[in-house]
Amino acid sequence: ETGVTQTPRHLVMGMTNKKSLKCEQHLGHNAMYWYKQSAKKPLELMFVYSLEERVENNSVPSRFSPECPNSSHLFLHLHTLQPEDSALYLCASSQDRVNGYTFGSGTRLTVV
Amino acid sequence: AQSVTQLDSQVPVFEEAPVELRCNYSSSVSVYLFWYVQYPNQGLQLLLKYLSGSTLVKGINGFEAEFNKSQTSFHLRKPSVHISDTAEYFCAVSDPGNQFYFGTGTSLTVIP
Image 1: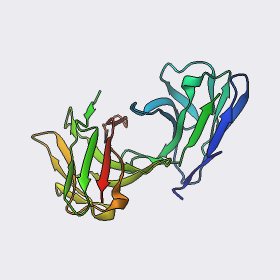
Image 2: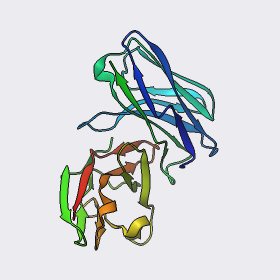
Image 3: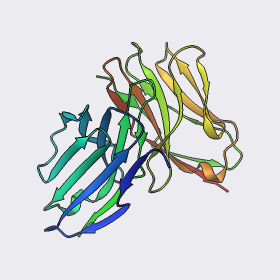
Image 4: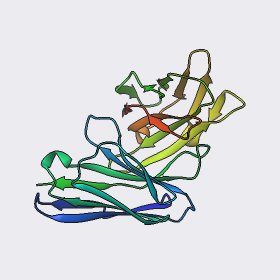
């Protein structure tokens, strides 16, 4: 247990489904992140929230919609995904650059 | 912006042999350096970090890394690897703007 909890651990969804990924941290961190990790590709930063405000969106398709209702929770809402969106989605949180990031265990998403 | 280079995408090594995983970054200006390990279907876990002081830092699981400012390198080493060290290893840099940059990862495979 790292202090960052992601649910569900595995998700299989059809291209017409709507689902949400959840991330929760009780470390007192003030920033949270969504990363996408595909096979044979570098980690891709998707979204950054600092003090619950979105500060970065790296040109992510609109079929991915983040939500940060408070400093402890982060969601990634998914709709009309494509098979190439299948990947491991990682949530991370941080307080400052000294301590780096704390990652969750990820959600393995398969789009069929 | 920083760039982090991990030249070796895959490193096979026999059990109980030493290993070095290489990491180079683009600028030494007030950077903090990190190594993370990722086991299959897990998130990234912090191995060690360099903030300041002694250039040799020790981390968990018997790993250590050496900061070399002149060569802008932060190579990870272990004198004797175990089967359980088989994993993906990521080097990361944080800059004064609290931006975090990850390398592309090195897959370490320990051969019995």
